[in-house]
Image 1 (tube, rainbow, N blue to C red):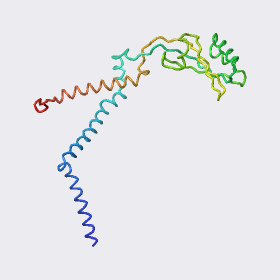
Image 2: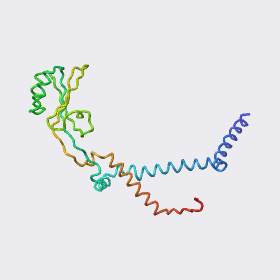
Image 3: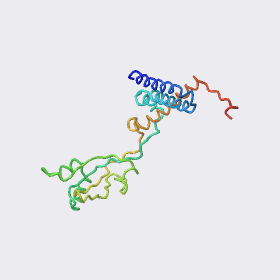
Image 4: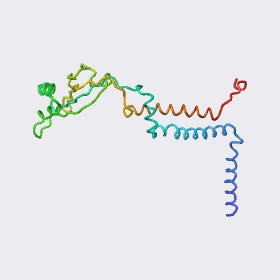
Length: 211
């Protein structure tokens, strides 16, 4: 009984294995689907190796490619901002800070108002592009201009920004536009690859059959 049971299991196993090997012969649709999967995986791996990975890792090639498309990516006018946050809701204190900040550096402003252990004024910097930041959308685009103070009732703070410098339009460096340039480089590498494939494997279309 034990031998017969093991033999029956063996027969079922081998029969299924054989049947699996005949699927592509017996079912053309299945064969076409399997081929589609295989070719899709092959194309993905080849593209990853020849296009995607190369574009990300070939720093010399990327630099050379960047030189050929210089000027494609550029900054609009930008502004260097001083961003102040005052730990007080007193409008009088705000006026004093803004008047002093108008003629003094941020470091001097902090030194004047943060006396001893009391830090009532926090400062930071930010560079924004014209038309792309809410920080400057409702203020004059000129050096020395202030934004409307933003009130935070919950934290009891007043925040505002001051334009310290206007930076004219300029071309983006490779580092500044790296993501866009890598994407362009990938497109370029893919076109080169396709052209090489066309030369190596000429395609002839039978027009009658196609029609």
